[in-house]
Amino acid sequence: MTMAVLYHHPVPEDITLLPLLRAVADPVRLGIICHLHSLGEANCTTLLRGRPKSSMSHHFQVLREAGILHTRVEGVQHHNTLRLDVLEERFPGLMASILRECPTSLPENG
Amino acid sequence: MTMAVLYHHPVPEDITLLPLLRAVADPVRLGIICHLHSLGEANCTTLLRGRPKSSMSHHFQVLREAGILHTRVEGVQHHNTLRLDVLEERFPGLMASILRECPTSLPENG
DNA sequence: CTTTTTGTTCTATCAACATAGAACAATAAA
DNA sequence: TTTATTGTTCTATGTTGATAGAACAAAAAG
Image 1 (cartoon, chains in turn blue, yellow, green, red):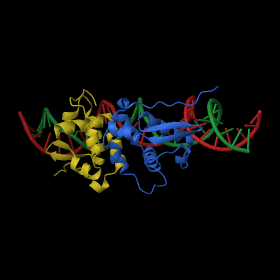
Image 2 (cartoon, rainbow over the protein chains, first blue to last red; image 1 turned 135 degrees about the vertical axis):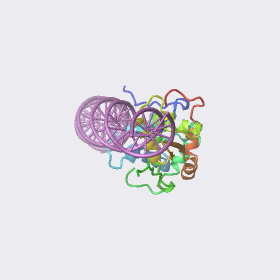
Image 3 (cartoon, each protein chain N blue to C red; image 1 turned 30 degrees about the horizontal axis):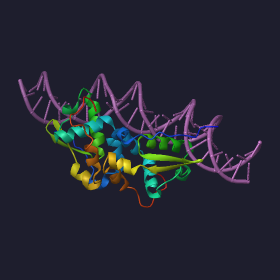
Image 4 (tube, rainbow over the protein chains, first blue to last red; image 1 turned 180 degrees about the vertical axis):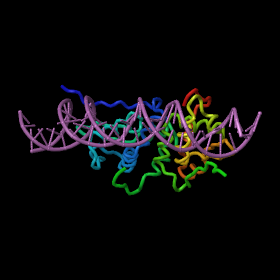
């Protein structure tokens, strides 16, 4: 018997502004956020866009620990979704003002 | 005849999300923003709080170039104010959701 | 003119973080 | 069981950016 990967998702009270802003203030992660917003749910490989998986895994970890996304494990695949309800409860209007800036047609990089 | 210091303040169209987020995602600058919000206007020395002036000058520059604050020169003193109207026009709700997190009684650092 | 105040610019240093290869772990498929 | 897929962890490297001292610039005060 082996162990499946488990993630820690911070509860709303533990989500603080500065780490959240630091997580969002990166071009790759802002791109991930926009993609997740348009796709609803996506796994790591879907969002690779030519980057190494280790880099993506790192960015997903930062976003997860900042409270921005939730990772649901289903077999080998890890499905990621934005925690929009939690973020709206914790910082009303913040994500909305950011997501409004997402390009409608997603760019090559970002 | 000598030259007075002149600052460049980006027009609203040139204010972009990523530099703005990067500017805000720093503990010192987030503190400056909260102070400016509560004070309305302040010069560099007022917000020093034990830091070297060169550091403060750097942070003010970052905030200025990100479009977050405006610097008005009056003799030797440089008065800084948040460009809330411009930011609200450019990214509705963003600054409001950030300023809502400012501590009511300002802390020692930040 | 000299001194003081305010803030910038220059320069160097240090720490934080993004990038990415390699090895590994877990599940699914063949 | 062997192979393929998905993603993490480890480690190293490089870059970005914050910190801060020193010299400088401008304006006001004495």
